Length: 192
Image (cartoon, rainbow, N blue to C red; front, side, top):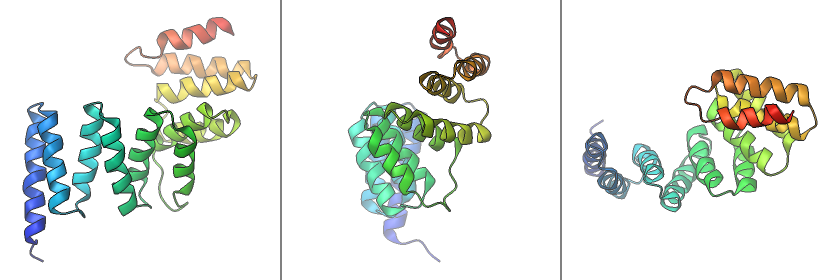
C-alpha cells in the first residue's frame, strides 16, 4: 500500500527530528516531531519522540501533553503507559501514576522500567508493601537496576525488615555502575 501524502509529510518531519537529534539540536528536534504529529496524528513515532525530546529539554509539561495524547491513542500499550507515568512521577503525582499503571490491561506486557516506576510511585504514596511486590517483579526482568534495589531497600526499611533492607542496599551498591546511589545506600546501611 502506497503511503498517503500526510504519512509522507510526517515521515519527512520525523527524519528532520532524527537529524536534529544527532546534531544535538533538541529544540529543533522537538519542533520537527511536533510537525510530524500535526501532519499525521496517527504517527506514534512522532508522539514518542516528542515525549522523549521534551523530557530531555526538561519541559515536563510539554512531555506530559504528548504522552497523554500517545496514551489516549494506544491505551493498552506499556510504552505509552510508561512515558505518561514517567512524566507524572517527575511531577510527584504518585496516585495518578499508580492509577495509570493499574489501568493497563493484564494482557499488556510490562517491562522492568514501567514496573520500577510503578513501584516508586507506590512507595512515595505510602504503600510500601505493594511496592515490594512490584519491585520484585521488576527485578525479575532486570536484576541490575540499582534504583529498584535501592527503593526496595527503603520499602523494607519502612516495613521494619532491616535484614532485607541491608541486602537490597548492598545489591544497590553492587549494581550501581555510575555511583548515583552509593552515598544514599551507604547512609541507609550505616543507619541499619
